[in-house]
Length: 499
Image (cartoon, rainbow, N blue to C red; front, side):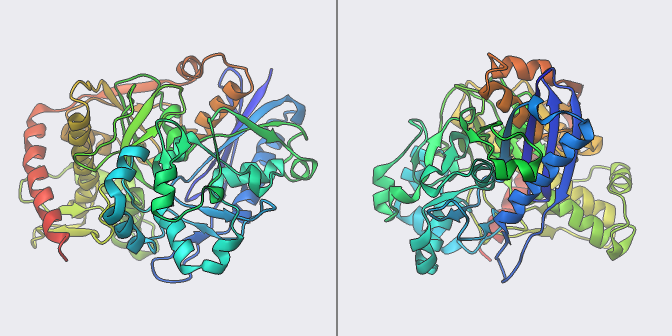
């Protein structure tokens, strides 16, 4: 039987998984990443270290499964979406990975929004934020010598695929699921927009070719085969962005399905049959699905999942040594009564992305001496759910005919039944946990199979591979409670935005 490999270059680390063509997972491997913080607001990674982690995890999967390398029919890689890597003419990196957590491009966000923010939103599907456009302008404006050496800007998944295949700078690519973050694309046509490039003085020669996520972009070279354990000549499929892969791995293959990716970022997405930019509220981005002819309107909290780990480490029962257990914190928070005057938490500790307000930061408000760590922790969970309520309202504003059927939760945070319940009650929508835990690598493996022709339909293959658990139904009385909390929450954010 043929096998498929999917790889996810995430913020916390790189995860690879090897599947047979029926969807059975034969092996998984993980390697932690190393985030670099050379200056305040700067977050970088070494692209070569990211590529090395891909090779190492793929090799471990092949060895653990005991599968001959020749049985691997294809591989696809996804990665962090909103950051950029500059590559030179030979295809090697000339910049570090400028992470989606890196906020030094903030002045260029304001500049893009002032000059042509509405036009960027209408064409790309996303307003300028901490994403490709402002980051490219930062390198152009602040690192002129380096900018001259850049042949194209790519993302970690694309860079790793280029290295596997030995692609040059003029063969650099971006798959279409990233285009809403680009700042310079006509997303509906899947092409670069000459007017936007001209407006901001960015040559289209600095932008990679655009490909569909299922396209075979090359074959594994002999050098890469020695590093990765793959067979030379193995097809490499373009892959997609990590959130797109997660949406696919959650079974978001038909209109009406909502997805909650409870990972490093807290991502809320819908599945729709049309490209509809959120021009009115400017909250949602609208990106292409990995599934042909579908779109994902979505928004996310920058590092929303990181807030929980930070809280556990600093305020949990185990104190600063990080020994407290998130399950214990949830258990304590679940015993609390629901009170209108309990504290609120704003989760934008890395700056608000949707809509772009990079100077708006995290906060707790409404504290009294009666509140303890369990109240604070529940407020952190609740803050994410209230943001999702704002996203859902924006979605209904964009598409009044949209009828959500359920919210499918995936990622590490989806394992918390308490948190799933908060989201169900705040949104008044049933929430189901996806029963599989492979996440984005599963989505990429499906894409690899589709790209090399093992699956005639990506959506049909996903339906066969993926199952969802029992639904947590919303409690109507708590829906009224969260309506009041949402009004207070939005009032609080409006005041914080002026600081």
